Length: 323
Image 1 (cartoon, one colour):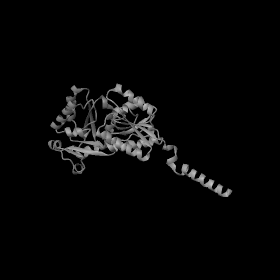
Image 2 (cartoon, one colour):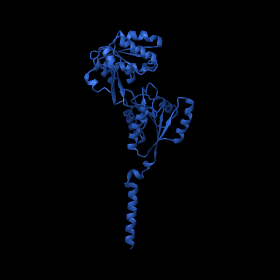
Image 3 (cartoon, helix red, strand yellow):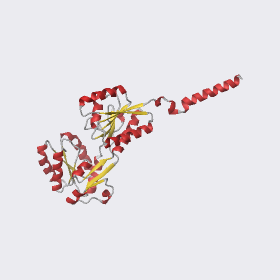
Image 4 (cartoon, one colour):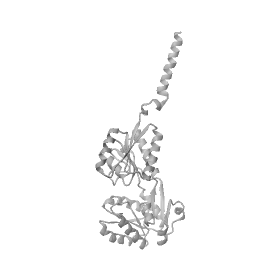
């Protein structure tokens, strides 16, 4: 009788042990909710696609993840409530979409890991120290398309191009030295002309178009205002100079071509980075990613007007053709 009782007790203990140890995640400490705070500045389709990608990847690896969404305001005075709510939440990490949301998180949270997404030029914006070694408590998925890829597309469209130009301002001056090195590796000479203000644009553009066979562009908000963008597009078209826009919207307005990114793919990258952070890897050690799904867009009317034939291999894969 005592033996049977002892046997039953052993079975009960064994089952209890298996329920704690053998079932893994179900009874582990890791099952406590992983609170992820999402901060964005709008509800645009691009933002929703980015979030969809990120949440999908995070939830797949961490089904216990709990997402809390915060929408910041253009009125900075109204964002203190959001900041206070984020602090009370004590999230495992903050996932931001876009530069405005990233700026808010970067300025107000220094002890919570931050993973940004859909940010252009994160080094230039001051969010990270470098792409390879972000530093501090922040890293993420940028919208940047590697310069060598951009120049390679330019060479496919203009095979005999030797000199490529670019206009820049003080805002984007730090991008030029590295771009010049990349151009040299591809057998190109990058001619960069600085635009100090709106009045100096005509002379700068005129000087540049006389020296190069094509013009590359960087997303510089100090340079590409609506009026100056129209001026650049009209004058490069008039002089027959191929102009590469920094987004598909510039192509729609008249640029010859541009490379664009897939926001959901950027979100997938951000989600993968977030998983590393949740699993304990410091953001400072995680390299910032660049866009890995790239779309080609071109303007057929512009191509005809400046006598450029888009190679069949590119025309066949074009995401959008503007006519």
